[in-house]
Image 1: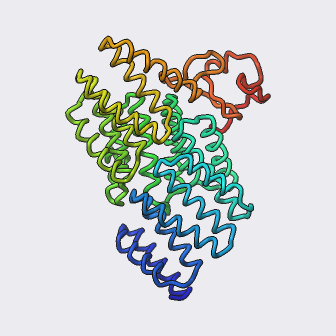
Image 2: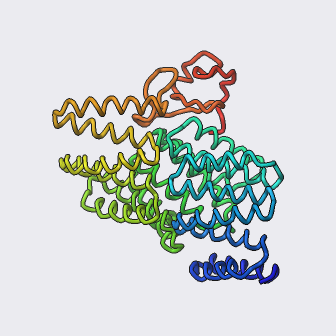
Image 3: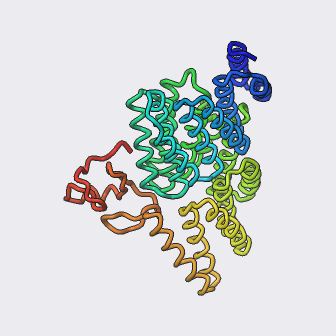
Length: 419
């Protein structure tokens, strides 16, 4: 298969994929991979296969094609192709919760010779690195990376990248419990979809709606949260609908988890449990270990509400193993906090002390405390502000602080950053 025929077949696959005929598209692309002798065409079709398997949640297959793409890029001896393939390798590892590997591959990308095409991918590299740092609960480093990605987006008028960064920032602020910002950023993403996203994949609309649903639930607006995940008034909430239409298994799992959390917040545990079970099934199937931790934490809270403390501890133990495996300190912190309350109610002092110690160790490791008042960040909903150095403080503390430098690193400017 020559160059022209390879291009035609790649385009045919893209048209099939965009019309939701995913399996047919995969067949076309696999045939190109098997028969084409055109290295550039092979590289492009491998990129299509990486993207398709990512959106279907077939992360191990995604990783396999990313590795083959790197070999192809090396044959081509082109810095742009090598950068793109290392970025796909980073993303594959990010999806599999191999966050240290993600960061390593992103650093490899940043160390490659800078070209115009490379500069355009720089924002995506920073976004992937930020997501990995967030997965490891390294919040300052995550914020630094998201700031860089946002600058790339603004400097290059890349609304699609800005949309993705805004969704990640929504997740960031949901985790550190500034729920106003957790809602603001996905709302901004939704605005970008409405203003610029006519030709974009519907996944961007679905992604912004999902993150809005999470924020609304945390704010206690459970009806709005449900509308964002399901089809709401005037077609506003489409997240689960789009996920089902496009076979987006990862987003389906996240929506199911959100549904379960909403029902748990309503006290409807009978409805919550089967949603957690369905979310867990998909999370396990696709290999999202951090998602499994979030499901098990929700299940544990349901068992606590039912006073079934031994079942809660069993769910916590499973979640703790997974959280330690992926290196997510915030999940470990939450699980130790929940264990602490259970052992206190049981009157088991030795176990209680062990979890209190580990809880405080996790707080130190995540650096989740305000450098001005010394209180923890992330214990309750509070308005936060990041400085240009990416250190985070309570907004009220900064407003009451008379100095003009960061209390943590002493950088001179107190001007707030992008985020």
